[in-house]
Image (cartoon, rainbow, N blue to C red; front, side, top):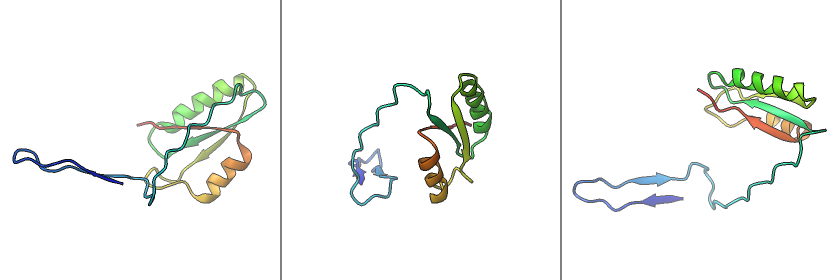
Length: 103
């Protein structure tokens, strides 16, 4: 998807590109959160950015204090998508994901 704004002599044209790389972008409805985390496994995913592990360590401590099971996963780098194997692990082992976005 590309959007272009008209240029004027004082302002150059602006071109925006859809970063999803999809040929036909579609709107996906937001999934409803579970009514409770009781009995569920929460995946805590770091994305390779500074201090995201610090944030996830705190979330893990708080969840486990309430008896909620967690697993930790980390992307190798924030510059690329998560590897398929990691996404499959999360899909099979976890019910909910908390993804850390921090700087």
